[in-house]
Image (cartoon, rainbow, N blue to C red; front, side):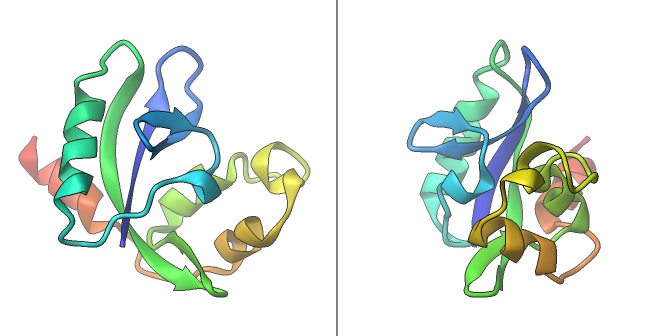
Length: 119
């Protein structure tokens, strides 16, 4: 599975793609199968919004506590907000936050590695 992420240009907030728009919560993001052409179409659409978001890219996901979470530790931190537990998205709690906090996986997302290779 994959999800599309970027940073919102106006305030730097981490955002995720959902049904043609950007949302702030990873739990609200659209999930794409690994071979889903809609994922590449969403990424292309995001890249055509240079005044809205910066550097949209697909991230790899893994199952965690019955929900999905980014494989990459970096992407889990981005989805959770600041690393201080009393601030940002982590302070809201809930099942999706718990799944992100307890997820395990590789150190890097292949989507990000592919992005780096293209440069």
